[in-house]
Image: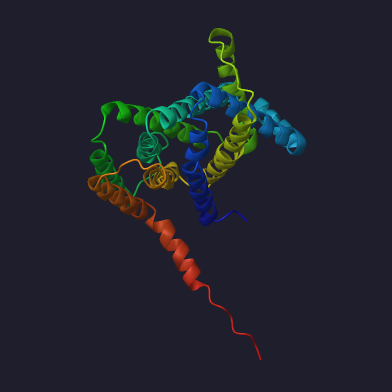
Length: 309
């Protein structure tokens, strides 16, 4: 039996929620450079993922390799190119996001993931021919209006946010095109690509990894709970949900980040911005109306059967 859409929706919402709380361990590492944090994150995540693959999914790895060999030459090269591109995109996304969170502002990082769903939804419609209903178009227009209203701050911050959003949106869209590879194996390959991309930094920029235990403790938390788990959840959700819904569901990430920024780190949010964030929330509900109605209608339909005397 195939998993219900509700399961996929819960998976992507959980991924978004986890990413929203990543600001805590990242801020704890604020004294370290974005390169050092990213290097540590990828090293730890790489060894964790490949340990799991080699211990529990070795046969899956062999099957995926055999599947690739059976593909048409041109199609196989296309898949390999997409895997390479996805690894590059997620590496750049992680690096820029860490830099923005620790050296620009939490609000900029959150704003990036307000833009991301719009780009993902439109990209899925244009590149993958994923249909959008009139209600979804209205929701996107409302979300776009809200984002424009929020983009009244620094152009410098907006450009950083747009770049983060674009790289992650393209990463998500590419995942929809790669269906021949197991999701954990896919993550392992992407982390391998990231590792290869970062190696030249050691030779040309002489970047070293800190030896302090707290650094590795926080990096391990980031690698497991804010890299491996949410990425697997999002890759799983992509099997049953269109890119547009995936993108909109990610809005839970910036909402949590914004709450943390204002309530915990005391970054100021003006009343005008609060109005636009509320409009964004309405747009999210409107966009996912069909799925939400389905969830509540099923729950309402469940009745407790009376016990027979």
